[in-house]
Length: 633
Image 1 (tube, rainbow, N blue to C red):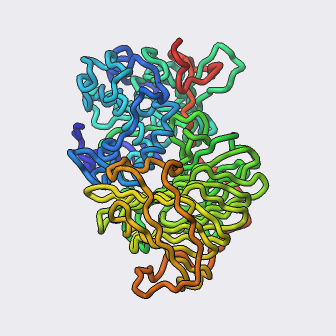
Image 2 (image 1 turned 120 degrees about the vertical axis):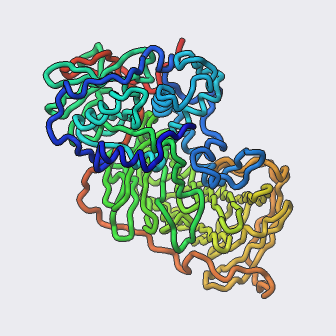
């Protein structure tokens, strides 16, 4: 990848063009159409792809482990073998979540890749052709991976934090200054568009700006939903409004893209920050006492749409501030927090929608979920070298269920108001020992109103489980180091009422035995222990746990253990303390303050309209959205 523009030079140029970056104020005088007429030289026939925006399929390749190394650097890998990256558990889960989110469309990746080909950052020959319009998609894994890679940068930093919002006239002026420089432009952009309610996010490639009269301009684009068609976004520079739509049915308003100076529904993303190694708050860890960066939460749902008026999916801090949906209204009261949805999703709340919540480290939050429909949730939490993923989580229809996260990703307490059967996956990196563990608790039944807490302490490598009732679960742990992996499996493990502690450092070979120390009274003294052998019957070089999935049923069984009166011998390596308090934490319930909406975009990449050279008057949208386009007969 050519990195022809150093980050500091890029920053200086962009600051001169737009300061501050997220709230451009370069238009000191009204923008005139004649001043922004420009043409980059991008030829819609030859510089765009001939295939339409596409959904994922068995023959489509998305992100792979080596792409994660390219994206985040060597810290994404727990080891490198013949230049192949074995990614850490948190990075593996992030890759899986990103791949799931692009299942329904690759618009961002196509917009960026076509732009980079035009500006000679990429060469068509790399993908098997002499020009862009001759590059095939089918059986072209190199191109498919490239498109997926650039798609993934839409929510990584510094790319995401350099997205430019402003008045439509200001954005047009900034874009015109870049387009006039053609292929020699030092700063160039993709264009993001959203509907008025910030859904339907889509990414397109700008081509030129034309004067339509009455101080109205046409922003001509390559829309990857419609190959070889010159499309136009109409911008009224006087009123600072814009629209992009088209339909033969004047009564169909299902896909109207439009906005004004306050909507933030039009945005520009500069390509240069994408060229840098992206920040990764979950790739490596500091200490639990000094977590760094942000925490990222991704939430997906299988089942009914949950933007229902009665739906609540909200993070709440200890002092009652909230981020998320409360009774169907999106609110943000947490300083430094934000929420978006990956482009490419057919709706906000489903397996490909995955709202992305960003919350600064150091803030304890409780996720509250309630819905009247039949839904199963997946919640992924990333930060400080760790990931916690809860899947197959069901909730009550008449009361809120809580998932409490600490001030760093390392512990979770589940307090469900209905019986639920989640799978809980922990992935953590230990920088000092250059090891990682991927630990999965499955077939776990959490009774209603019976909190269970699981925590991992990276300083001691101890897992602690606290439960208010006796229960059972299946356990699988993978330890990865710079040479190999070791897998430990045990089924039907008893969780007694009280506290259980075990250390993953005991899994340092195949057929290892793990000691589980039991504190039935949760008084800090262990009154029983069980030594459970590894029942794994697979090769030590088997592939890593790819996601939060149940332990294979073919694995040998083990008898459950129950606490006894046997005193733990003093020579036993029993942890001296754990990160979990001796009493169950009290979850936050607060009286909701007045709800106010926030302008944070919530794109869902529903497809775009079919207009060529949209007229100045208000257009009408198509009869059905196209993201992704319908299959070819």
